[in-house]
Image (cartoon, rainbow over all chains, first blue to last red):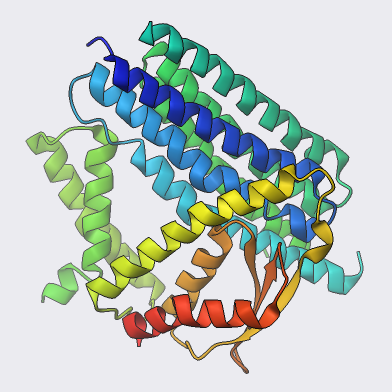
Length: 103
Length: 93
Length: 163
């Protein structure tokens, strides 16, 4: 376990705060926006840049403390990027269908 | 000095993510329609996964990564099943 | 023969890489197990009888990925501003219909993923008969501008890659 140099600690801290902040704003949009179709846009903030920043922070931290490239977190970023559009698409299509049905 | 910066950033990030989860739970509980609740649940999954990643950094253990990946996978499948349910009223036809 | 063993070569490579990343190791055992999965997984996939994807022009793919990243960063910022705005300019959202020339199923799937994963835009519907795609835009001011934007920024590149 290596000690974390100053620049890495600051960088990790910055990426973490940025990621968590963006995710929080996205979820806040879920509460604040008034129409359903507006609200679907909000969580994508957390699943794009929010996830990317936190995953990067984790990669930098572990790569330095374990003194070897730790890249497996990138799988989470790729997986979330690929799957979120699919879930959102399905939910929106379900919502459109239910709107037409008048439920 | 630098270690304390990271500690504070971790606490702040975890508080922000916890608040994000509260927002998602609000939408999950409040609705008003079923599709709003599904979106809330999906966001809750993603936020919980990110929170686990920050716990991983905090404890310096990569075990949390596995849990985060499992949550991401299960969350995806669950949301797809729920969307399908909203569409037809049945998951498997 | 090669087609028999590797029906989807890129998918094989991806499975192999994912296996090594998950195990965080390049020991001979993991290399062997990963190779086995990389060969058997795609062969199992042939049971689904997927249409073959043909795509080319690596430069266009890289350019597309960069444009996408650029859009994600910019619209993250834009959506965050809308959410944090004290009196929510939420009334400006609406639907836009965009006639597409793109017919490749994989191209359309990629366009749907790009549009939906960018905050602020959402793919909602596609009519296979007319080729008209409908999307929802959070900050809709000029419909014609969005039609032009999607066609020029993404559709031209996707046509180049998939058709």
